[in-house]
Image 1 (tube, rainbow over the protein chains, first blue to last red):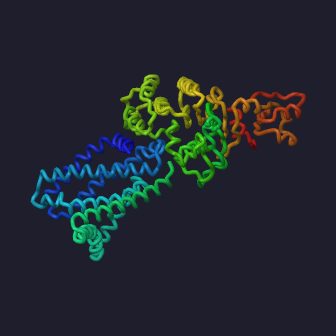
Image 2 (image 1 turned 120 degrees about the horizontal axis):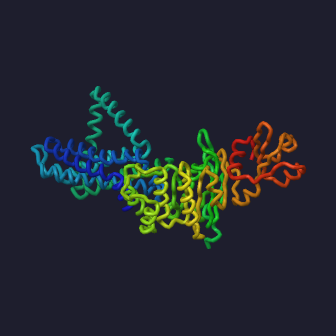
Image 3 (image 1 turned 30 degrees about the horizontal axis):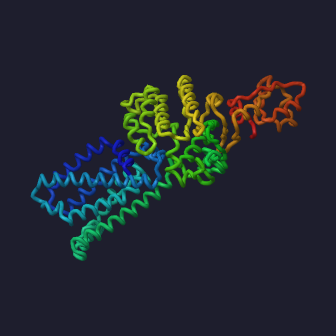
Length: 221
Length: 291
């Protein structure tokens, strides 16, 4: 796996340094302005996931998949490398962002809202939700597909917001992740909740990974 | 154990697209030899090479490299293969040093000393960005990477196209030096047939997605001939002798792979000249011939 991490680091070095620094500072700043832990978790998870998406959508431009496929590696391993690099980056940015948030406290969020078990599980859940959808999309469609998806969902979102029932559905969907984490804590206690949520997250990541492998195996270069 | 196993064995390979199909491609590259994959542009040479490297998914057939299924043993096979693509998959904004750092960890047998030696020999500045290199220098860099991990097989896709004769000779010299080790082999696609006449041991000719012939080069050059004569070559009873015909105002030229029959058919004299690979490619492609 080391070779994949190095390959991606060399390819995206500048972007990682720029985005991996700017985003955590931005999140740190935002955390001093927000007073809803759930909104903060959702927004920061999405922002950190975006760093990863930016990297992988750049691969089209750099013909990086063609190079990876010419090297001694199976397609499954190439995708595994993508997921590993992605999670490393997200976790790294998150740790940096959280440290900045703790050092730069605002009136809205307490330390427990940032590093408490509930907050950690929630942010991991949202990250998983974003990654599980976007990784297979970037594998299949690259940058163009993701842009079409983002613009398409925004248009759908605007249309949905024109109807009260749709807004409720979206809120219910987003809230269900948080309620799932809360329910796990209530049912299994703190340790059990961590285990239960982590198992679900690993499973969702695994399913997303298998879908990405399936799509990547069908791709031709 | 491995002596009799060819470096590459392709059998019944097929791949279909909406407007092009590669069918029943079969050839074998013995170890210690160099094979030229020739054919006009769009014949399917790059498709064959991409299928060997699993950049494309084959619809049918079998690809064995060092006796191993190229798909089932992908990592093991690719560790022993050095590749040079027609359009290299390297990022233009990265320096040669960084590109090497991306590629080298994938090869347990990476030879840093050999790589540095090749950069020096090819006069490639390690700190220069790949995108700033000329086509020839890009090709040299790809070759330096391919030669730095003790590969047993080099797969080169059009490495000499668009390059000046000095570099082409230099490259051919490198390939000949690589083949000094009898365990090494080279598969080399090109439409510049003069390069192959210098160094190839085997020639595989591809046209319209099909292998027209795959044979030792010397045997090929002995077997094929260009026949020059008058209108008598066009007689219907001789049509079966020709694999390609070219009519000019006063002269008819034809390609044959059956010289003894030609000599019997025209005892009083037509000119029979040894065909070059370029003649063979020309007549089989444009000479209204039927292979």
